[in-house]
Image 1 (cartoon, helix red, strand yellow):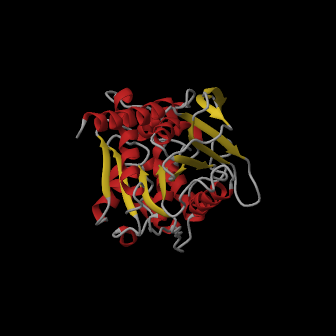
Image 2: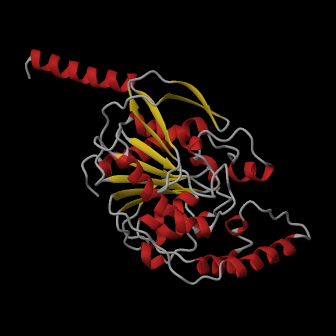
Image 3: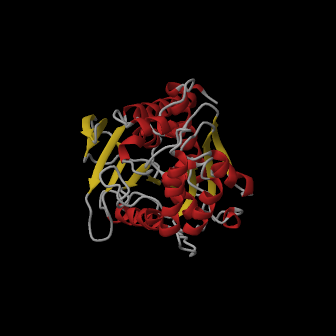
Length: 347
């Protein structure tokens, strides 16, 4: 290679590198409309980012700024229960700085503003809400012409991981959750009871177990199978997902590229009943990351500043978990996965 050619290539590289360094995160908040709930969109922009407050969090974003050229790929994030877009901001920022546009639908009655219908009631709606979020981005003038909607990525964590498995081809039934809890409630209590209470080893535990199972007998007496497909979604990451209620056969051969993230010290969704069980049956799944010292909240960043004692126990970091190094590494792994699977439009 001649010196002149080398200089041209070097200048091109430095120009690309500099533009990526100077890029910032834009944010647009779409309100509810007749077809969907609110959708928050993050995207590359060259506008100056400033600090903004949302739901107790500080976000460094450029509100309503003009989008910059990215990689033309959309990622939809399905939040956990009951969460917000803001606890995924570090992942979102990593994705955006790699060129992705990221959309986060607010799941109806299972979010930080309204948590009145968590569990199977929400799980039936969530995949449809993801599809409607894709429609909202497609129909938005700022983004519709700039993105390729034939190769969309999807990430979900916890209850959002359940959404991810559904969109990957899994089918589930409320009756399977009831059966799982009848058999494993003491070992996987918070999958069955959520945030209602916890076991302490005391004399009231037997009463708590009986109450939770009684509620399940009433609420989850539904043997129907539920599934939802969106052909636009071609790559999925399920992080610490709710999975005990899925038909294992439906996840042997997922419809799309599927990766899972597990955390060994997850006390909310015990891995052997959920992520590990999917990995054991799935023929094509990629085990993207396993966090030996991570808990359920290792996939959230930033963590909420104010949490009840029970929530802090379930999503707080176990002793020995190095959040400052592990979370960025995990976010880069997720971003790299979507780059590999979506950038060239391949599964």
